[in-house]
Image (tube, rainbow over all chains, first blue to last red; front, side, top):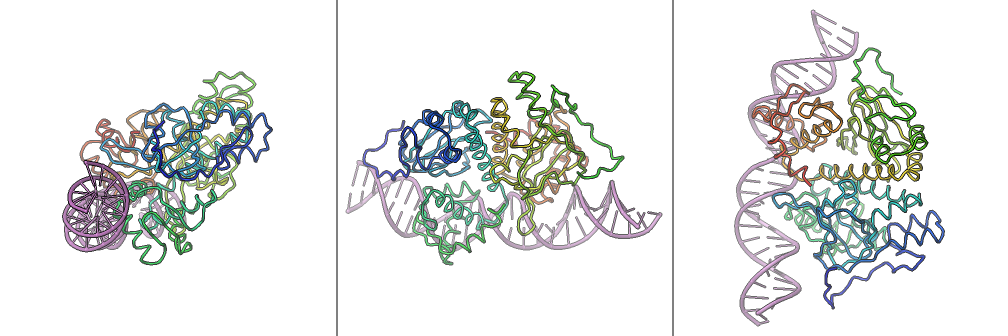
Length: 250
Length: 250
DNA sequence: CAGCCGACATGATCTGGATCAAGGATTGCT
DNA sequence: AGCAATCCTTGATCCAGATCATGTCGGCTG
């Protein structure tokens, strides 16, 4: 798709490419498939409908708002944001998606993508035709279950975002949640690289960029985090969790 | 479940009770089943797993936060709110659900209900065991599709709620959206009865009850709506739509 | 290497909506 | 009937976070 500058430092894809019988280890569907102990033909069916796409450079669109909905995308490497832009140009960032997570599920009901999906860094994806994967889900109850779970999980995340909370609680929750999601994919639990700008974080948390900046500064001042540009280390994870509790606990 | 005072005026259930081959006309699944033109045995399977429950009186719990997830509920008559209460007692209303809509889908991923579901007025439901209905969905692709659509739709609603918008835009969007959902179920398009208190509306829209009251008052003053307690008539639907545009348009 | 641009930080001010306060209307309870 | 409780409204004040304004840094380009 998008041309990819020749000598950009790619982030190392943490997923292997999979072969006929093994999926990228990070893929959101691998657990479902493996857990259910599917036999080789079923696995082959799933594998056959995967399409590896990428690389996308930072800023490239994976899909665009109002495009007809045809496929969902699992992030294999890199990171994406999903964004809606309203009539007078204000941006809302619906979410950030890291390796192992799936993008596009909010397009099922409207039958077109309700948002843009934009790569934040050089990224690779697995593309699953939605008609194909849902047809397959009919024959693989574990896959169907996994799809239900993924959409329902997304619903939980959107609900959290809708909550009413102080700015510092939301920023703390953002850091804690992102760190936990990275940790779930095998990344270090207390250090993270923010793939997104302060602007994106702000547009995600319904805050002004200045507020995000100030709060991160305050967290640093008070020793809760180390902060160097987009590199963050959670120094007092307990305290951050406590701040985030009302946002994340359900 | 809850005892139901003998002589309360029930709202007329708008759904027939269904017989062996016909579902309550309002049921969220009837369209799916009918659309796909299922044969009698398949329809019987679906019908067999429905359990009609109720009545629930206003204030009764349909399910509670942290209960294990076993079933989803289609509203047959009445109305429900779903609510989370955080550690220090602040309530967030996730949504309101009217006849024809389904409650409980946000429990799939966590495997327990993440919220309370509380009847707002005397209400009846169809209860679907989730393991049973998803097993059936395996044999009825149209039903599977309908479940995907329902969860994805819910996701869209949660996303709107997460948006950043002025208080009057959110109140306008609330009225317009609710009116449209009632209209989709065959109710009059420009008149509605609010089953919920101002407090519930406020907790839903992240506003103070005072703000909701003031904004409704302002809408009335400026002729956008007629307002008498919980009875609302949308007088200038166009103007209200315009106000709500940034919230609802996607 | 100067010049530029975008991302980030930080100080000063402003404001939408929260909070505090009070009163009226309904409804249920004894 | 009388009373408590809840719901709703309206007014007065306050404040968290937005907005406005400036400055810094680092990276890229000509």
